[in-house]
Image (cartoon, rainbow, N blue to C red; front, side, top):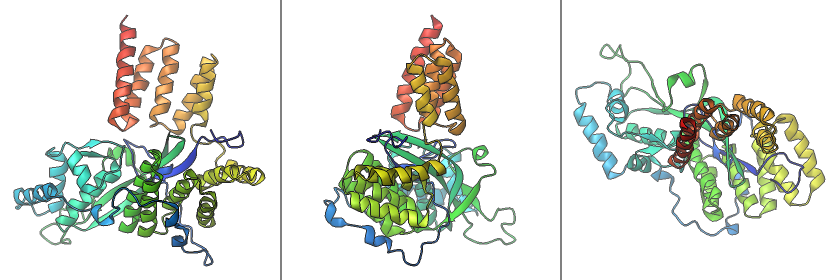
Length: 406
């Protein structure tokens, strides 16, 4: 928790682009795509580049290269050329690409919401989160000279947490246009083809917004900043956050992550300046308000922190995991029925949150309802998004089934 009971949130808030399974999203001192509205910066606002202070951090351990995000490795080039050759008689190259990626199962892609991978890394691992898989698809499409458009998909955000960071993620997909526009030869071909890595039913009726490529690059860099920050690598996190800002100075989640890097590294003045830059453009940004409360509190400015906390409570009356944490507390105190009610309320807010499903399973197991506990554990596995968590939940499910069989 934060240093006092002033704030009801654990950790600080970061946004991360698109680590998502099924219909899930994320908020950070890292990770996510909860894009800040369409706020217009006041004319007196200082340029975002003025927020950078390279002198506070060592050089990163790796080269941060935006050009590498879409770059094709040699194995990818061979795969692309084999696809082109094997489908030479197929007029719509988009369908040929999708057949190679999905229908024919040549890549056997798996979802993994751990480290965000660039296009070649996702190809090599045959796995990635939705942003990684979109980058890989776009890289192939560019190589095949297909027009590409990126979209943010405005779905309900999903929160996750770890290492005292709360993360919110969003979802992106990619739209492929035909290389040649409609003529008598392709009247049966739709003008555009949306490529997404979640079931279409999960996206039915949602709104989308077109993203410039610079924003997609900023999202990638922001995700990497969040991930390295979670690992405690402040210098590397700063380098990625710096590159996110360079790619798109208007991408507010990236600037929020930069502020969290400063906060985690103990540079409180820089953190406050950066957060106020975000709030000047998006006054109700929940992540920035959360992080400003933490910054002011660490600075010993408790009265100011309390005022900002009041504004945050108005914007977000119930913070992420509020009902889950209350439910866990009730469970620890033996109030099982109350715990079930509270955790169910969290699941109504976050139906794809694996941690909430796990604790729902714990409550059900405590009351002897093994079938319902198994159901929640299966959902926790489904929505956990990475092999490590899936393995952990699988082991708990096997143990629970053993109990049920006795």
